[in-house]
Amino acid sequence: TDGPPDQQLWDSANDGSLADPAEIKAQVRRLLNPLDQNDAMARFIREYFHFDEASSVGKEADEFPFHDAEALEDDTRLFVDEVLARSDAESLLETLLTADWGFARAGTAESYNLASADLPSDGSPELVTFESGKRVGILSQPSWIVAYSKMDHSDAIRRGKFVREALLCGNIPPINIGMVEPLDLSPDKTMRESLEQHVSDPSCQGCHSLMDPLGLPFSSFDHVGRERDMEAGRPVDATGSLSGSGSQDGDFDGVPEMMDRLAASEIVRQCFVIHAYEYFRGAQRAESDGCALQDADAALLGAGGNVVELIGEFFASDEFLIRVPVEGE
Image 1 (tube, rainbow, N blue to C red):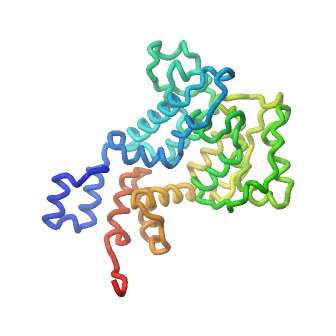
Image 2: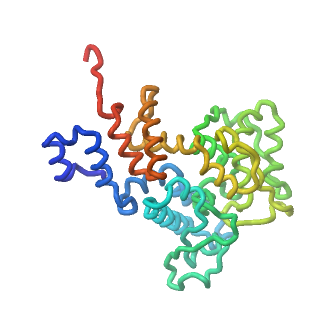
Image 3: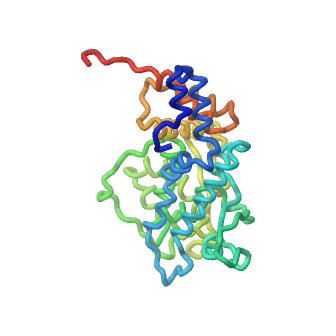
């Protein structure tokens, strides 16, 4: 809550009941619910997906006069709040990744391929369903697309790196970017064609094989977040391949299919548990935290994706409650 204990929590501590893990879980439920009225989970999602960095990526105002990064970020904040509001009945992670709805306003309509006339004339945001079937989940929000772009082109590498590391808990080895030959981003080349110069280099293949098949499917969006069917004068190729996801590995076509696979992946669910564990504990996981993570994952599964039960399991675990003195201290 970013504040001191309230009286109810003090009372539970003073009468000794807070020593009971069941009481701890009950207090977590009390303090976090309802999720959309508590900034803790919204802040976690914001820091997890970094969609609020869209305003740090400049776009040419003359070419894209409709682009309003701050308004797009606010649209996504509203989307997150709505996901949290539905979390009692829906799996939060699955909804985050696959929802075919979001918020838009007259001033951001073009970024969503919507008509501004269909949205409130006073500029207020409205809940809309994306009918095209191409825009699903938080990674199709224009704010996220822009946050993971460059000033004048898309960034398939960073998008793929995000999916690999943040959703699949994979690892991309660090490299000296100064040693990498710049991409040929000619306007007559698609991003897939431009990346072939790296894929064909044996020293680059290892990393790019982990990132590119997860980043190139976002070619169905331009670098300001609009859906598109053509790239460099040719039909968009949004195919990709998922690896390291457990049972969901395989080829796919388009972001919606990739999101469906990721949402159904046990690896993605476990990775989400790890990120939440480190965030709410305020420390990186250690090898000794394995049992706590397994119990938390089981709690999330047993609660139908309810993250409040996940967080309650963190703070009721022996790994959190028991401290072993270090010899000599």
